[in-house]
Length: 187
Image (cartoon, rainbow, N blue to C red; front, side, top):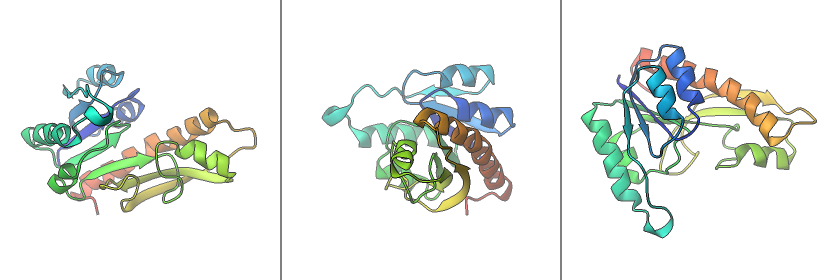
């Protein structure tokens, strides 16, 4: 299976994957970010499909078609989203059914969405964690592949809790991707 990583942020997940030797065939970013430096440091091929429109002017379907076109050009079989900032249109999930995976900083189905850590703290949970799941058209709603709990400490802030979750997430996501690659299928 040929693996692509779609990322938009600091590149810590990409760094963990590359440092553990995952065979990454392509890194794609939707904006200029530190992921580019991480990819360069590991000698990974990178493609920049910069998203320049936001709000009502953003054509999600056209942008997704560009992403899918690039993935096809590179013969990608498995996509791992790693902080990818753009929600993809249905075409992505139709083109790679069940082969786009994501990670989320909460124990899904609890606290989906962009603020999972903040929402867990606001709710007063004693345990949260991270989830690796199959990405679908509905955000944070696909089949769960792996989860691991992280205890909430009494004086946790959103930042301190998120850092502990990220440490678990980098390991769990990398392990899950490796298992998928070894068996040759997501499920």
